[in-house]
Amino acid sequence: MIHPVYQFRQFDLAISLIFQTLPMCEISRTENPSHRDIENLFAQACQLHQDGKLEKALKLYRQLLKKLPGLSLLHFNCGLVLFELGLFQDAENHYRKAAGLQEDDPDIHYNRGLNFRRLYKFSEAAQSFGYAIKAGDTTVDTFYNLALCHQDMEDYAVAERLYMRILKETPDHLSSLNNYAYLCHKSGNIKKAEQLYRQLLLYNPQHQGAKHMLDSLSGETPDTAPLEYVEAVFDNYATEFEQSLIDNLEYRTPTTLHTLYNNLFPDSSRILALDLGCGTGLAGQEFNDCCREIIGVDISEKMLHVAAEKKIYKKLIKDDILHFLQNSSDVFDLIVAVDVFTYMGCLEQVFASCSDSSSDKGLFLFSVEVSHSETFELKTTGRFGHSHDYINMVSQKTGWTILKSVHSRLRKDGGEWIEGFIFILEKHADPPGKF
Image 1 (cartoon, rainbow, N blue to C red):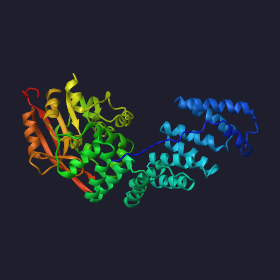
Image 2: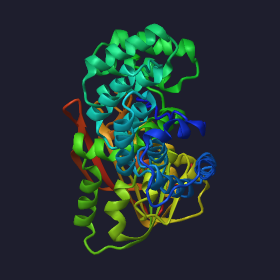
Image 3: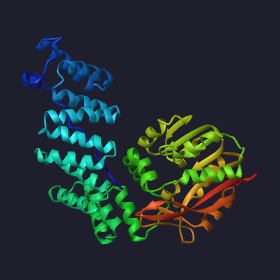
Image 4: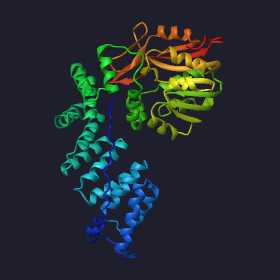
């Protein structure tokens, strides 16, 4: 579990900086505004920026840049606004100019590094954080973000050294503890990972992620992963989720599931579909062509923000999937849950609730990771696996018939394929009662 920190350095509201820099700036020859005019315009722009009126602030900053194109502070503030608007390439254009005009400003390099991370340019981000450190920025945030860059580039040895440096000076830096534990876990240094997770729990006894990962390492198998843990995982992963899964992990499960569905029902058009644990909308994109309306549900608000940009859902709802199913009055013709049950062990309740929420002959499509246990297990990865026999038993018990199941490679992890099953279930004509 990774906790990236995208933290701003607040821009300086001291108007006097403009006047300190004015002699070095080339003022437009067609206009010669007074210092008071510039002061008022800059103050208005900064106030709008602070109030969250980003487009209006940007408009004023750009007006000032026409008069003062050589002022690094204005390029810096434009970069901040554009970052907040999600226009990361435009932000980089201004950060580059700001850095060229004022090479020794650590805040420019720091924020440029954050912006590069959002552009998935991790090498450039690491370089920017390095420049910030050379310019005198020795704060934990900068070293932490530098560590994240090396982690993203899979330069794990450097990332570990940086986390160790942070923890030497700040032993209670929880994100570094957690990420260092994750890297030790990933590299097979289980003893060190357990030590770090326990240390994390000493500082924060309620840290659900550390508890869950200790369970996975000790062989304990709870019924489900803590909601707080799942929410944190996907909130922290939201901005990089699709690129990481598709480009790096060769993730194709939504496409595979959709192909299997089309082979069984080539001319079917389902009226209302439910995308459980919809994430960023990868499954919704696949099934959009065979559904009139899709409702998406996910525990991660940040994932839902990304899904909303695809404009394929009738509604997007932030909720635990079981709570949603037990409280929804909608009746669905198709329910899809792709890579959702890796965070749930016992599936009887959710299968029964899906049956209660389905129309007659409704379909239920999902994937699970393979388990060689009799039922389900919490793997050392922190994800659950389920046996085919267990899915068969729970399906029969909760009103479902298995129409199709196939063994599938779900995605890669550490260069190795994760094996799984893909299922298509149909609701019984006379399903059993509620649990």
